[in-house]
Amino acid sequence: MKKLLLIAIALVSASCVSQGGINSGLVSEKNGKIGIGTSNPDELLTVKGKIHTQEVLVDLNGAVAPDYVFNTYYDGNSLEKPEYTFKSLSEIASFVEENRHLPAVPSAKEIEEKGLSLKEMNLLLLEKIEELTLHTLEQQKHIEVLQKKVEALENK
Image 1 (tube, rainbow, N blue to C red):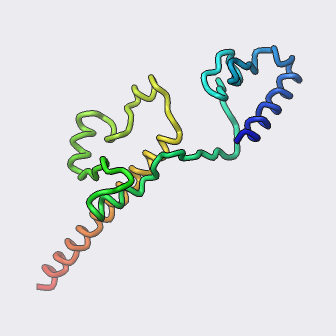
Image 2 (image 1 turned 45 degrees about the vertical axis):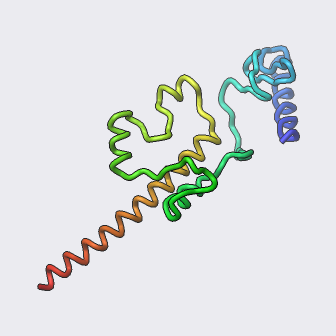
Image 3 (image 1 turned 120 degrees about the vertical axis):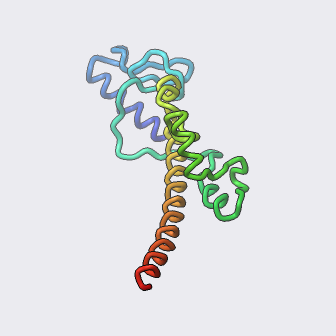
């Protein structure tokens, strides 16, 4: 990761030099933190503006991938995330009607105020996809039961 950061800094520095030098305001360093497009970096690397890349690799570093959704659904609980509960569609509908966003998903206002962590949001979206998959599978089972009942009625 450090090598990637050094390469990025070298490329940006070379670009800055060709565009008027490192003091042109494009790159700054403060307390060991690098800023691109800002003179007040607040993280190891702070970029104010767009970033164009082919790939971003995010380490989980203690975050839990959402297998807990399936574990809770099939086993009743999960060791990975014991506080997680699988909500019924009616519980989700009530929550959405009242709050205008999905449970556990930050509202648009929260995201606007606090920003968005890509790692957290990707894990949260995967959680929601897994929940949707389980609800779809449940619905498919109900559809198949209803189809059999319809067929039985038609055959009378």
